[in-house]
Amino acid sequence: MNINAETSTRQPMIIKYNQVTNNGIRLQIMPKYCIGYVTKGAKYIYSNNQRHIINKGEMFYLNAGQHYLENTSDIDNEFEEILFLYSPEQLNKILNDLSLTFKLEIENNHMCEKCSDTNYIICKSWSNLAVFFNSVSQYIKDNVFNVDYTGEILKMTELIYLIISNKECCIKNKLLNNNDMCKINFEQVIQNNIFNNLSIEELASICNKSLTTFKKEFKEYFHDSPHKWFINQRLAHTRLLLISTNKSISEISNECSFTNTSHFIKLFKKQYAVTPSHFRAKNKQLNIEQAQIVPENYI
Image 1: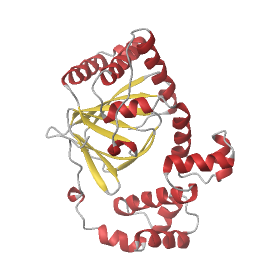
Image 2: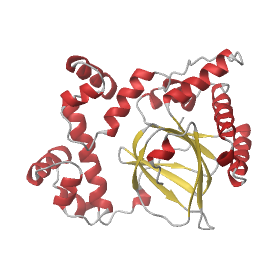
Image 3: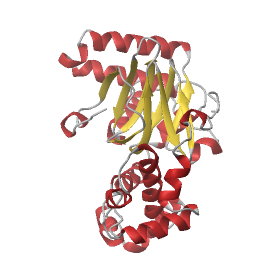
């Protein structure tokens, strides 16, 4: 899925994405927050050495930032999904309209450890949501949104209403947490700069925070120091490249912003107790289909 800068600024944005071949695991950088629905095939999210499946007819949520995703076709060799992408500003305007104009009472009493620290959610859609996404699919087929942006806004508002007016659930919790503007902007800056060699001082400046405040908030949001967190994120990406590409160790090291290959190997061995070469050899014969799958109804 390729989302260019010009498209990503449209407010809001509804996309139908089709795929006829399986392209394997991909690192996808989401420019905005996303609510999606799989209409054909299945989608996988890879996180913490586990593979989480999104089946046809299920809904999902993705934070802005990076995700390891894989789309697989059905028996008719098709994959299809509908994506709603939005910024915190767009969401805030919709929630204000629902609250002030339509007098919708918006409360979030959801307490759940399973979704508090994840950057994705998977859930079964309820009947009126399935009807809703079918109508959106027809709108896209008829090119309604290409000539009427108001239609996009109305459908985005309808989706938010269907989720907010539903009983407490993880996807509703994530959606309402997006309304915390300071946290969102802070996290998005960090996620977008994982592979950029910026100093802590430069990141603090981008976030308009003092160095002391930046370090404190970073610890609160990511539960680690900036240096350790960035190293761990980059090392996690090198593991994916080691098992999914034929790139050399030095190429992977450079791609993941480790400027010294020997230092990268040392860090990798310290983190995973094996060298990159041994890790690649060990995993070469593993069948990814045997990866542990989170139960579909885990939320």
